[in-house]
Image 1 (cartoon, rainbow, N blue to C red):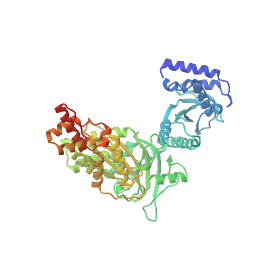
Image 2 (image 1 turned 135 degrees about the vertical axis):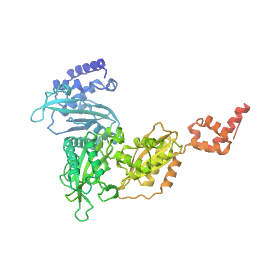
Image 3 (image 1 turned 180 degrees about the vertical axis):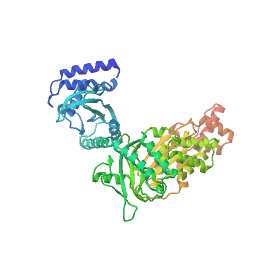
Length: 556
């Protein structure tokens, strides 16, 4: 908010507050509410606030103060309601989400992400932080804006979000959603140090336990990767331990009491943990090394709603026998996606292996192209992919060499829980409609239950669509890759592509090139929907005759 306009608005609201009589909802502490006012609206855009009646802004402030006037240590106060003048002292066209909780990292963006995942548009977000003092019963004694409140005993987040209005019967479920998110954020942040220390302990054990391969380069690289993670490149959200079943030595069972972060707790935590890593097994081909990076079977409720990253480390006894599994679960930090992969342990080894097996010099032309492909490879996939799959995919992309063609690469998760699909296509062919058509084909053929995508445009003539298609547990889709690619290619062919083909098949090459240059973008969308490109060639010839002879041409 601009300083002068903001000050005037705060002054106006202060006057309205001073004139506000106690209402039917009970009295309020004028001094505390005035202190709340000073920071509550100060950083909100005037344009956002001008959409609301000033009296309603004051009423919302008083209503939020009533929620925060009593809060016990560790408690999160959440209220979701449709404001009513008689019941709440103010009104709004929106549904309001109010939160008062201990200030924690990721609180606002986690709540916002959960609401967005539900398809709820957030119209306004207010989230000041206050230093507060409370008595032994949790009653509010004093509050002050956080930057001025070093002497007060605790910092609390005071959050109000306006979302598109929801029916009254949907409010309890929405409130439980927010309560759950706040609880997850609290567990993740309060156990963050414990999980970091656990990662350090696992790293040390990799170097000291008596395993057959503790001196091999892979073990050293695994230790380096864990140290890299610990150095602020991984947001720890949960951790747990599994032990191998004593009967068949393959099934994994959750170790009671091992859960930290959002997996802290009893039976509910166990069910959550087992569902998150179901399908992962220590004896499967995808887990031939002591450390594996994969995705959990759930989206994060903390920070951002991406599928959780799972770093799984085999646990061995003194004889080197695998007896269990440590799982560090969370999200890679933004720096993990922006830094060159050759600076990241494990990834650098994969890249070295690709160059070695492809017999390429990094300084050659092809070597530089491959380096660029790997630098821009979807980072999540680069963490998870095997060297074999990375090599074949990289060489396939190299083979495109800026050619105007569409290619599909399918990379199965080693535990058969999802497929990574990379589609390269000429950038002028990309459109939302083409992406949706390709996505529908992949979901149909692979039996997908959920799909996420990311599109990349660069200086290349090719665009890339990165799909991750989730499949039901235990399913093994049968598909022909060549046939699937043919369908993807067909879906990417535009009307202009059809016009090009029709022109070069129906008129001589020089004329076709000229017509394509002049008419490729000339036909409106309605025409393209109704008429095949072959018809357009005939119409182009009629237009050309009319232009040449300067007379009307009629075709019925």
